Length: 216
Length: 252
Ligand SMILES: Nc1ncnc2c1ncn2[C@@H]1O[C@H](COP(=O)(O)OP(=O)(O)OP(=O)(O)O)[C@@H](O)[C@H]1O
Ligand SMILES: [Mg+2]
Image 1 (cartoon, chains in turn orange, brown):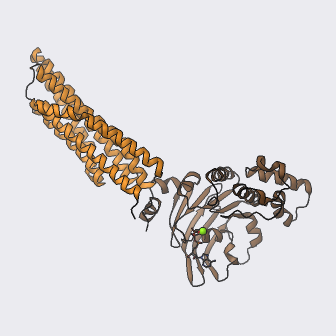
Image 2 (image 1 turned 30 degrees about the vertical axis):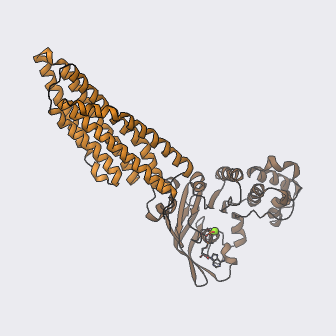
Image 3 (image 1 turned 90 degrees about the vertical axis):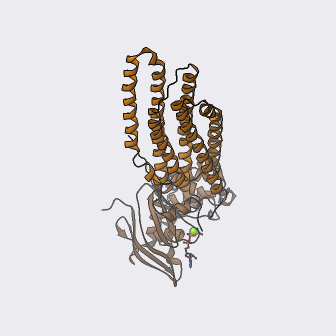
């Protein structure tokens, strides 16, 4: 049996998937912008920031409306509770994408930008986590997030590696300080994106199984 | 000794050829509220009525299994059914006060059981009507006809009447379905209060009501008890697919 409420809940789920895809693209392009010094990509991210915020408020309003009007139970209740938390995490990831793009633009404008493909490795891990957490939501498949703990460790390890490289480069020449400072900032943002993907994964796990877990 | 006040084990019930309950097992903890939910005709009222043997009066009704109350099987033929119904009272969907004064409604049971002393009867009236949260509304007109009360007040009077014979368990069959939201609220609050001194089993079609007031919830379907668990588990994360579908409105 399908009723208006379930149709509305499906539509709301669709909006979350749309917001997730948008933010995933923002993150992907911000990393490309930073790693390759690609201004077009960086600008694209900044242009879409407002769209992510718009979806965030739209989804929140609709989720609260459904809660009030229908007092959903069980799986429906867990889905809406999950959505209300998830959009905060997705929104934050969007903000990190914006920060990464701004860092790329600053470097490009100061003429300090050097290609840094290493950051794309870390970016790839973070983006994959975000994508899988969202895919787990879309498909109700928690298998996709089973290994998040070790993936999150991997991100931490990469950030630590970058830190050592950056310090060495900064010591070698003061001319590297600006570049590697933003390099480290971006590594930090990517690590935070991984943390937020873990948060999304925890909520999706609750939505699907009804059990609360903590990823580290 | 069991920690349960009531234990239902392997209960089967037939109305003539028709089996209305299939192997139902469940227990009721003292000083708790247990809710029974499920679609129309699934056997909620039948199960409730079995607990104080109200089904006895239905011709062709046959029961198998065991219902223990204080560890004694109440389905045994030697059970004193009158005494049982004194211990396990019942409130119905439609308020059914007797066509007599408010006060007489409450004293009727005790007088039937031989209490005649005026002073104790007066005390009992105040006590029971107080417990059913009706006192402030009727204390000035205890002699007025019960029929002059509103539906919600009548239902609380019926609860006062049930309390007058000093029961341990109160069975309620959709007690608020004929009441407006405010009167419903009062009955729900009252049920919560009663839990201190009594044990309540309530049948309701209102899922929010079950989730608001009960400690345990049983979901019934086609004469079977599909799932029985703590209320928060049933409404947050039921184990059975059928339960999930029913409470999220995806049934049928
Ligand atoms: N007195 C009776 N004689 C014969 N069959 C009955 C009797 N009472 C109930 N039944 C049958 O037993 C089954 C369960 O009925 P019951 O009244 O217990 O359901 P219920 O869950 O309380 O439904 P509702 O929510 O509509 O009150 C139904 O199929 C009904 O037709
Ligand atoms: Mg019924």
